[in-house]
Image (tube, rainbow, N blue to C red; front, side):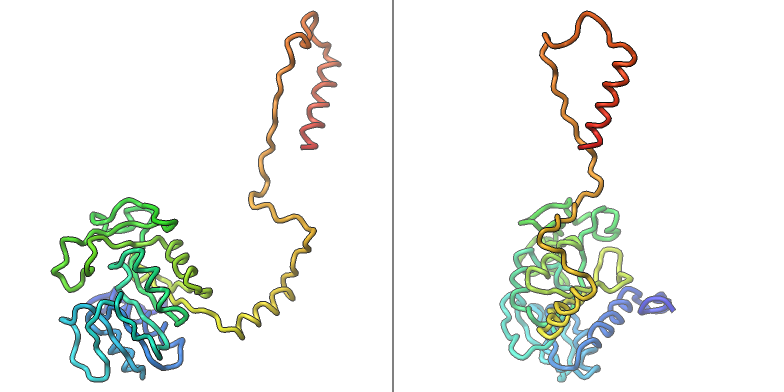
Length: 280
């Protein structure tokens, strides 16, 4: 048995089967409570959470795909305006992140933290060939405020229930930039679930460690990895740097002009040069 879904091709939507399995595995890490499903869309993940015993609030700006199920509180709202985080225990963003701008990402994370976050999103791969389906709509890798990623154009898709809302371009961060986004909101335990559910898609569980776990880490780390003494030199971040040499030309009048050095003199000069290079 390999992966969360052995032989996913048995299912009508193999990628969807992987996403469902990843969600169940991620949600099972936490005690049942109140789940906030942002960008709920078709509502399948809200229903799964309800089946697992969770109380669920599902939010989406378009309600055309909401199923009829009274166990879930269905809220029609732009996730950027929704503020009902109150007693929420865990937040899920499953298929939402890649329809938002970078500014939306950072603002939303500030609202979500410190709650655990289950995130399923497309990301920018370094090679455009890593986007076999969405490549034509993606820009080149760019840097926005220190976050690397690609812009995904969906301005001509606004009439579709699966498109962005109010923004023509959405930001797909690289994996490293996604990690930095989460770290900027205080998340210090960020786990990628593998294998990926699709070629350019990542499944992440982000948590902020509680004070007891953090204290345990701070207590035990020095026991097994002693701290460096203040007087010790810092580790060189570039191991085995290549030696550098500086050559200063002699003044013309100091250069010997009458005779070439004898072989003995040449050997002596060469030995001196070697000694100086070894000392550098």
